[in-house]
Amino acid sequence: MIRYDLDLEYLKTFQAVADFGSMHRAAEERHMTQPAVTRQMGILAREVGVPLFRRFGRGIRLTAAGEVLLKESRDIFRQVEEGLGRVREIGERDLTRLKLGSSHYVAANALAAPVRAFRKECPEVRIEFVCGSSEAMADKVRSGDLDLAVATLPARSEGLRRIRLWTDTFAAALSTETPLAKKERITLEELSGEPMLLPPSRSTTRLLIDRAFRKRRLYPVQVTELETLEEIAAAVAMTFGAAILPVRLFSLPSLHASHIAVRPIEGFDQTRDLGVLVRKGKTLRPQERALVTILERMREEVGAGSPPEE
Image 1 (cartoon, rainbow, N blue to C red):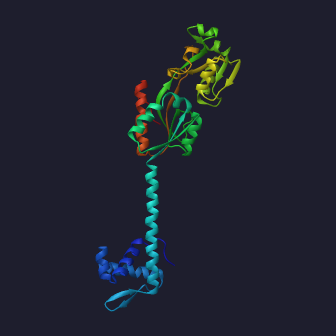
Image 2: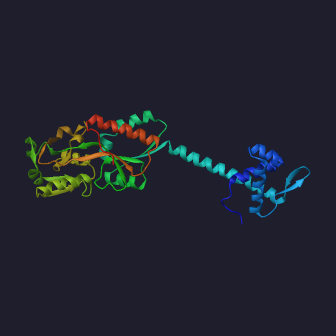
Image 3: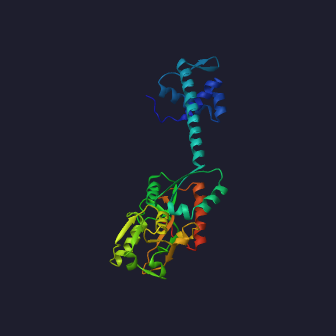
């Protein structure tokens, strides 16, 4: 039985001997000594179990078994080269593709300029973009479905490396038509008496809002859940209730500014970190490093200081 760990170099030497009909010429071609070539051919013949060459005058010729092995060995190297070519093609495609995820909030409020800069810097890279909740993006990064995501950094960091870009602070968002909008500052007690428009119960943002209410032993009288912060802001403008939203959200010029009053909340000290999520242990490819570098410039723009990297 042939050993499957037999060195492919033996087959290359075998092909040289077959092509030149001489151990001496094969040794020159392979930059080996003739005894080394003779030894390799002896080992190969023993492994195959049948003679591969026969003497013919001063040279050698292939036996019938040798002819078959020559054809099969050429097929082996052709298949190896084709396989390596396919691997190289995949690797090249891998260097020109980036699977990027983002929360709705980040996509609407902070991602356009960095992505435009990246596309100018790396025009050959094709971005596959996915948008969803921060929690969904974190799960996709953990599973490898995304190369990286920009979203609210989750409290649970298992399987994730987190690079903070900025920290959000919060304010009350009220319809300009509600009496509370006339006040300069709002308390949590006052907000708890209003219909509240809140993000989904399991989201990181909802958890910190609920924590603030629980610390005061307050429970809003009415809660309506909406999927995105942008939907919540629109609902506030439509007088459906009050909300607690990131101050940064109101930097968007189209965010119903004339219909929403933004007020500080007394005693509300909750914040949330936003940044880049990468699967823990992952080595960043060049295009991923380039995008992260561009995203980190956002940190300087918002004055968030030097963030920890986990």
